[in-house]
Length: 100
Image (cartoon, rainbow, N blue to C red; front, side):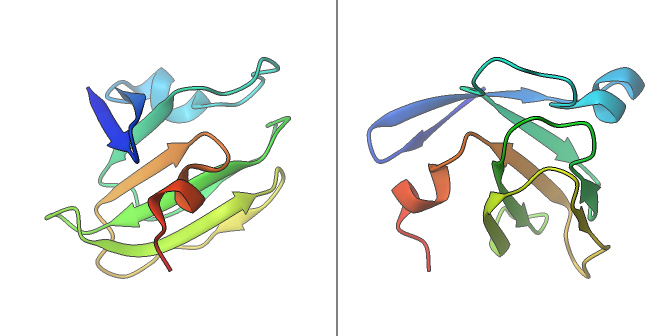
């Protein structure tokens, strides 16, 4: 799956297995160039990550509810009401969206 952010295609990998959901971007040292999609996920952490990411949380219709640009490692986003999808994206993706 791909999303297009201002003429920039970002590959999105759906984390649909237990291992993918648990690990996500943890322990990745190379620059993050793709994104991750977590269904039925309204809270995340960035423990064991080595670089910041952009996070977008949406409802079931993919309406953006929360954005977290430049979200640093070793942080937590507590559960958010009405969030169904969580996208972990390469740094700078939200800025390119020109969203808020």
